[in-house]
Length: 194
Image 1 (cartoon, helix red, strand yellow):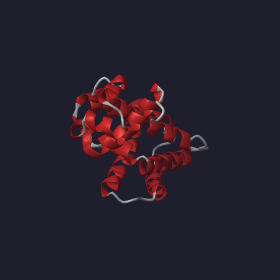
Image 2 (cartoon, rainbow, N blue to C red):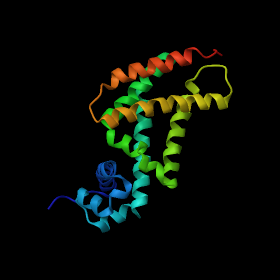
Image 3 (cartoon, helix red, strand yellow):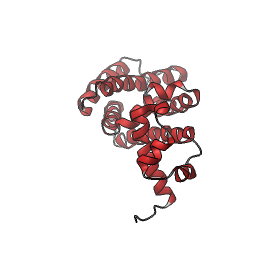
Image 4 (tube, helix red, strand yellow):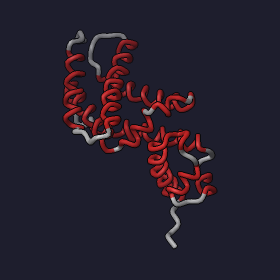
């Protein structure tokens, strides 16, 4: 008989398995039975960690968002100027998409945006990413314009990733990051400097 996992480890195991289940079949296509079976636990064990399917899905969205943002923060920690921040930020993001594709699918699939409570979680994650990007835009503009541009930069990455993931083939994260960061940096450089 396998050793019993401590509650935090069991919760993480369930989240990992549930990510694959939901990313593959979508929220409406997956059931708690599917998640319990894939995780090798009973439904009562699953419900000890998550009150409902909605609760589990929201926890997955938050976890995926945290992984994305942490990846970018870690990847940009050694940036020395605006250009290197742009390059390293996009490189970290596209590497995250390439290696954590299920988390990207979960966050940015249409299923996560159909239901208001889920779309609110995704919107808050996107806003958090834009909030992290906004101070890096070193130009003399008002805060609303800065926030708008930060959302545009986040949207640029999401849009490119959506196409790459939908194609289903492996992609060179560093090559696409180089292209997208060059495009973003050229646009940022053309704005009036502060």
